[in-house]
Image (cartoon, rainbow, N blue to C red; front, side, top):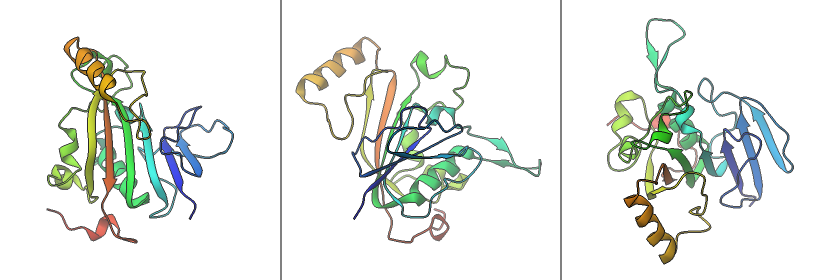
Length: 207
């Protein structure tokens, strides 16, 4: 079976950290990239334009921090939660046991705040809103189900801790040294989508 990967906010260089057969990307502007299917969409405002259970993996590099947490609803009388909605969408398009890999600047490092377009500041505890057994975002409409494979802090600009290249002893030692110096600016998430084929977010009852 052909395997597929989706890179969110792919920019000019879509990434394929799990080395899938097909690479797809979405962003607000499509810049042609060899061997990649690109679609133009603002996933903070619209659904991911792919069917359910379509991807074996999804990635988000320096992207989640740009997704608003709260926006006015179209009726102007209520609010919606674009980041929660996006996490529902990621879960929807992943196949059962599909993988999410995310890399984002995080609190308390200054890199999380210095870019004025960073509107979604994540922390080491943000995972509890979307992963087992906590699902704290159920109160905001989250209906997905993820389990944590790993979470770690890394230095910004370094991509040597991807799924196909896990840290060895020396890299773990280097991480500890950088942690003491306050250099670990980014958070890495690797999660697995827990679902059965065809299961939709609406099928999961609120906690």
